[in-house]
Length: 200
Image (cartoon, rainbow, N blue to C red; front, side):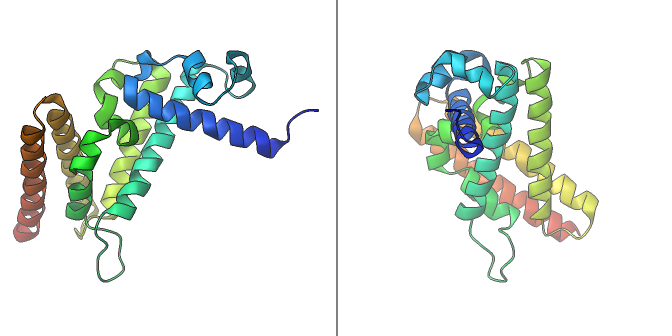
């Protein structure tokens, strides 16, 4: 008897989730369809009932990973007292945390393998570009700047600092040095945002 549509969608979701984690652990070139299917307890042959290709799965997994990270940041960042979403500086504090640094497999896919994605196939690069835009939109909506151009600039600067800081912290083998890097970038982002408000 064929599986129900609900079961098929649930299975597809499990595959995407497993792929999103595997990509963050090993990069897009370091994962195989067989390994992903093994993670969810399915055979390699069942893959093509859900996806046209590995590239199509990677594109969806990248989007899923970004959605997960943004939801985590919304939950983790300190919520403003007025009930608004967390401010950019609070989001940067959550992003540049020790726990995020120590768990790349569950964090931001751009920090985990952004440089690899820049050299990936067209479908993955398009998906990566879409994810960058999703981050910038999301961060821009949480900027306190009045002008749209300023919100975009703040979001872009914060995202670049956050990703760069996380990559640099993970690149060092010394945990104490990594924590210093994260703290320095958190302070830098807060200072930059405060300076923007003072200049306005």
